Image (cartoon, rainbow, N blue to C red; front, side):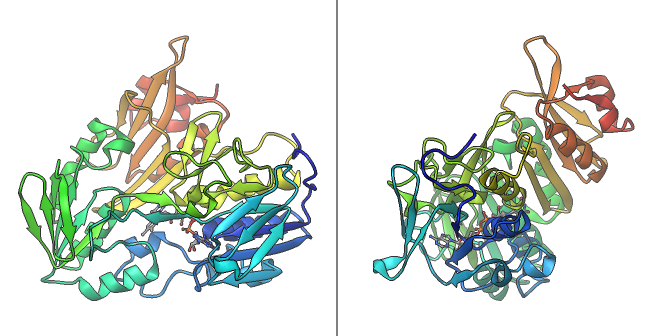
Length: 423
Ligand SMILES: Cc1cc2nc3c(=O)[nH]c(=O)nc-3n(C[C@H](O)[C@H](O)[C@H](O)COP(=O)(O)OP(=O)(O)OC[C@H]3O[C@@H](n4cnc5c(N)ncnc54)[C@H](O)[C@@H]3O)c2cc1C
């Protein structure tokens, strides 16, 4: 496939908007694959790119950001011809014929014309209107504030038992704080793992000294407390909302189609589905369509790390075969456990457990039947079982979901790869 119309390929001028993991990786992939044109990177933050996962997991043990350059992911000042930090894009204009695209700064302060703009503006934490004084955890400033406020003899209320809520609850409890987690659903992470597996996570909270209240509908929240819709109240020294993220894409409104949750819908090459050929998107700001898994919402580190390679390969035309379509992959450290989710578990999938929850490491496999009735592996959730992660990532990154020998897979002594047949 080629870019329609007059857009040059390879492009002569590329602007990357967003200088986080996905923006940095896009710049590094462009140079790594031989892009010799003009590269501009624009980022709203004034700090160099840093890694977000340690902000929650190492809240109290790492007081300086983990810089991505130091981790070998690339140095923006070396990669970009022009690097504009502390610059927030507020609008984008793309010509109908896809030949030219312009990014605008506030009040006409600056504008950048390019052949291709890569949107890598990530996502912002959801802030509920009216929840004044409620904190979030998204950047090093948030982390510094929470470090100051939390400690022994403080009470933290976290709204939301998702990935970040659970990780924050974990480290705050380990720091000696009293922690209450208020989750609206019946179990933690039920929307990702399903109700049966979500239920298996319930005992982890009490075992880690964290009070978890499920089915807790928050009516109002403020700096020092939460009011529940059943009339209950939780008073606390600090209240944190960990109720999800929204793609940072308001600046694209009207210029680029957006999904109902505000993400840019893209294909494996980061091309905007139904949008201008001169705009691509990657990382948390994009929902990637995978021919194998369907829509993969951006919100996780591995997508921001790896999707830029496919985007750039497609943009520069350097990939001979099909573009890579790595299995969705999420990791988390929470409540004394190392977790990963590989693939996407469809609702109603058959559950196959390897190992015994509550008694050492275990893995949940999610299986559906194909039209011939063959069991296909769709996703895996590993708990303290790193040896299953590699086989899951390899098998679930193949073009089709592998056939699984359910009886063999159920036995945790069987190597997982031996229970999977590529299809
Ligand atoms: C506390 C925390 C813990 C996490 N832990 C995990 C984990 O354990 N596992 C996991 O898989 N994922 C985790 N994540 C998610 C992971 O960090 C993200 O998926 C990843 O950072 C996405 O990278 P990105 O480059 O797409 O977005 P970001 O890292 O958000 O970077 C986007 C950048 O674009 C900038 N920007 C936004 N709008 C504009 C604009 N209009 N103009 C210019 N610049 C703009 C932003 O300021 C930001 O610097 C965690 C996230 C947080 C906050």
